[in-house]
Image (cartoon, rainbow, N blue to C red):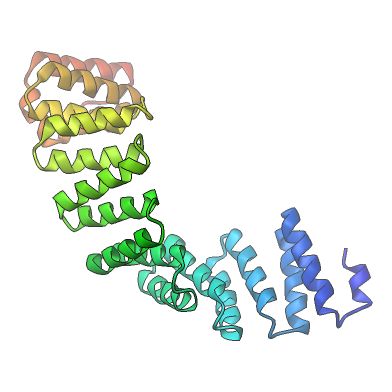
Length: 286
């Protein structure tokens, strides 16, 4: 494969281009060899380090990828992409949120109006539990893309984690104006309303979620819990049964252990449900 290049050992461009071609074909291991050769001949080239880092990232070799992105950023500190790519690994793969914040801040310094660095900086602050800063960056992201669903959704999620329930609900509603049938937005609204004791409104949200995800065990179980808290015994058992039929062990265990079912456990219908489903799915009720 490399025979034509071996007669030109000083050809950085040949090795680099071969790395690009192999990367496009999905031959990542050979592409790594080519980029490494290119780096040998031109150690201070930004793109060879950056492209090699991208392949290492695709292969799940995240620490090595970061090392290569750092080399690229050292060579061209003004370049946005090496900072942004590092930040994504720290945020999504390594859960090192302070490092992610540093990288996205550097990326944003190079492209101050960039939506993605702004949005991901908000995500990094959210996961780092610095909610006020997360909100500030999500607000900036919304100004950059006023019709973007994800910025509204993540802002709402941040407010939910911060226990600012009314503001969270308002922002989930804004997200729904963009994606009216989004499962997760309806689900999260339901969780907040359930926690606030507004069980009827929570049930309505869970039912809205069923429009796009009709066989969601989670939605069935949450409705079952809401009906149980309203003492609507028949509906509670109907929805609990639906959840059990999808994931027997999980929901039989919850039916036995969760406090919401305590008042049901002496009723004939509940006892028969647990016994019959346990036998059907060979799950012990003890």
